[in-house]
Image (tube, rainbow over all chains, first blue to last red; front, side, top):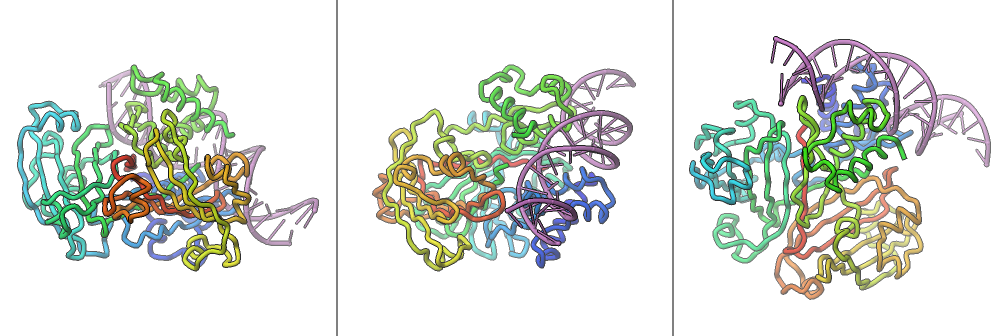
Length: 234
Length: 234
DNA sequence: TATAATTTGTCCGTATGTATA
DNA sequence: TTATACATACGGACAAATTAT
């Protein structure tokens, strides 16, 4: 791990533990330089990293201020590494509904930009937060990139499997957020009535080298799921 | 304007004009250094700027690739400067429904973090894209920061008024995206039936120095509005 | 109100590491 | 393996915005 990321992680931990809550800002760059024995460039790189993920905002001449996004349960779009990490102080459980390995439809081939002969895992899961139905996930993994998905893996965290077991580095995700009307199947799973709204995301997930390894459609409970976007106009 | 931002803008213009479509990537850093007569640092800063706004992704050892978010009409959350700029090749029109200057409710005081005596503009607008109802906007401006909002200004672009006339620099926006059920009033305005879904955003808008100048709730037509989020997991 | 000190922003240069082709 | 190209890290100087005096 690079030095600036390690510094960013250490500062992040202090932020979430409330270490800077009295001043509501980080120490000055000069102080951080001494504290972490590194160059100004490296400190600024670390602060940039924190800024991009929505932890802080900088004000020239004044300081680096905490940005405690009043998340109250919203999914932070800047810093999303799966439901389990997002809701780390809640209980996230998963019910696997189906897991199949089969040839992709033409539409799926174009989304995954894969060979039509490549086999694709089709996974449907219902995920709960603190016991309440939260999202129905339809996910499609390119089995050339993400092989050997078992029922056990699919029932826990596929994110962890990809990053920790397969040692693949997730690079980019393109996500389209929209609202729609629930169909009867999803409505039943989410415990809502047919015809009620849902908030959906359609995702294309890429490795650091740009290779698409998965795409998905997530159908969320409209009263339980909301998304937090922290914009910087710089 | 700083040098790296000017370079970023020039490269952005080339990108949107398709100048790099043949290779699908930018020239190398060394080439850009010579092209724009600047240091490596400045070029990398410009590329970073483009990356944060979703125009490019970098791959170490390989290059800087275009990231043509298949937006097809989605609102790009990384790069949103108002509907007018977002849909620059469509016709955005606005119908002002109401404009009032009055004392804020307690809830509004806490959202705007303003003095209870401060007068606040209450604006309700219906906005059309290519003639179709797109969003009902409920916006609340702190009149100490954004004064003299006229009907004419409210009917066009308040964003432009703030940035170009008042010379204020918008710094940050916290946005929560959710889905809900339309009430009868909004349904009529959007040309939908009562009880249909909407996709909503609740925004808190801050200047560069952190001062909150506005908050808003936007109720979007669920079939016409969608949001594009381009994540970088770096 | 004006000045100085503080703090982040921009820009330059150089060297070395790491991933890709 | 070698060359290419981006990533990380160090150093220094000055600019610009804010805050304190």
